[in-house]
Amino acid sequence: MMLTPTELERLTIFTAAELARKRRAKGLKLNHPEAIALISDEILEGAREGKSVAELMSYGSTILTTDDVMPGIAALILMIQVEGTFPDGTKLVTVHDPIRPGNRTVEKEGQVVPGELLPAEGELEINAGRRKATVEAINTADRPIQVGSHYHFFETNSALEFAREDA
Image 1 (cartoon, one colour):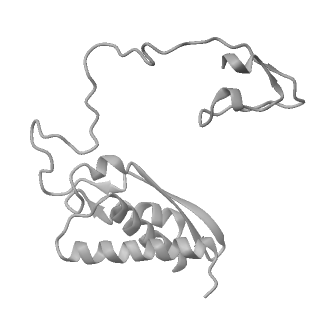
Image 2 (image 1 turned 45 degrees about the vertical axis):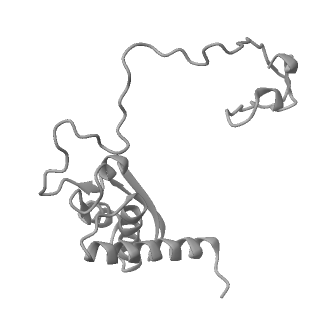
């Protein structure tokens, strides 16, 4: 079977969604990937059935509640975007706040929520004790150059002139 990357991705979503459906039917709470897969699969199937983007945006937030997912999961999934194939082409469906509050009280006073940020008091000095350098760079290219943070600055585009040994 020769499948495109998109078709393979669709099968992965379907498989994870089926696992989520089985676990949900057993009364188990869903984790992050299961919740996203289930909602995504429902949206993709709705698109295939010919429902509108507006219908699916609305429907996407009715599939799961906080009663269906592990504690803290709803706070981690603020938005889901799925590219679905509709009868008139491919469109992006965005669902904001896809996991709505349930009927049960999820959090107790003082309970730690998974993924919750608990900032410490005071200020934090970034790169404390590390060498700092100011480097002036000149773009000699005929177009703008973007520099990302995912590699060392001295490895950046050779059209940027600067003291690479200082970077």
